[in-house]
Figure 1: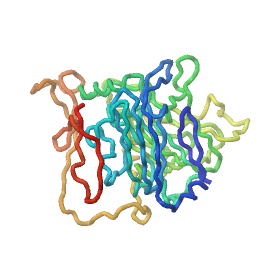
Figure 2 (figure 1 turned 180 degrees about the vertical axis):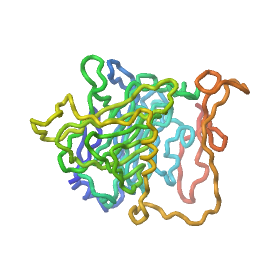
Figure 3 (figure 1 turned 135 degrees about the horizontal axis):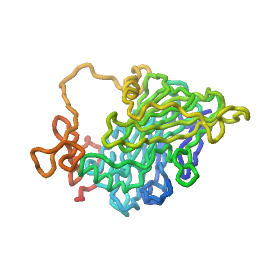
Figure 4 (figure 1 turned 90 degrees about the vertical axis):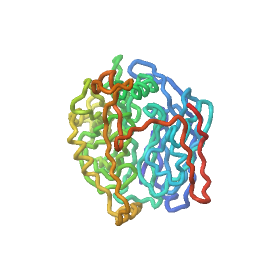
Length: 434
């Protein structure tokens, strides 16, 4: 019997049983409808009340569940003071580019006290994706998971007993709009979050009044298999993820099935999703899961260590078990904060399935009509139209990313979908000045 755990408000989880999934498997495509209300609420962490912009009062936001081929409809009401768009990260948006939610590209921001309806299909995709705000740095608190399940009800790997979203994020005590402006103006990023989070929980490493912050707790039963749907919702940092005493079998990334491989550490880049299987085969005890931010090897200035911990807690722990009290779960040995070799080897092992193993994998054309060369890089430019200046880390210059020596600047009016397939009615918001 498959059980699904999805994040709800105040840390609650809701369980959906396999009988419900199997009843829908193989049926007609459905319309999955959600209401998103974007507003600001105060949340208290680290002895401070912080005003944060969230969806439906939740951090992280609500989960979107669908089956391959379904239509997703999201009615968004913007009660925040900011213009908002929502990007459905990784959804291919075939024939629905206007629903992509890229602010000032496919859509003008949804203005305060207005509404907008997103509608798109999730055809030809299965796995884990996520949604997030695409205006300013508000995605740090405006985000949630997207789960697309196979309509057949089967996976190209052993079916897990339980599915668990694990959203790695960050807790910011600074104004995220100002954080984004500082980065946009200077080109360098010297603002840091206050803490890392797992499913919105800061973890017991943080303690400002003698009472530790809450941990995300995953209750497991011996012998069962758990699919952890990992999402890195951090603004910039890649994160290492481990569970003490357990191996993780990687089976998917960014809604693509992978050739399975087993590891004890997972590297999840910012914006990336990784699906792993974890068998509860360790001695019944309490084990920490940990997420550690991977930073450049030569930080300048020195970057703080960002780590969050959750707990994998076995049911029916023997009374004589060693090191299994609530205050002393077993901690995994994490890579060094500046270790980049581990992520290099991890991502080098991500291998797509052959077409026979992945029914959704399209056939790749053998013939190439035209070859394109794209050079990606990052450089420094002088401020105030100067021709020479000091590089990086000072007010004289700022960093820019470029492709073929061309950088990008957001337009002042949103681009429209000017051409659409014959007979297909497209929709987009009207372009307006910011």
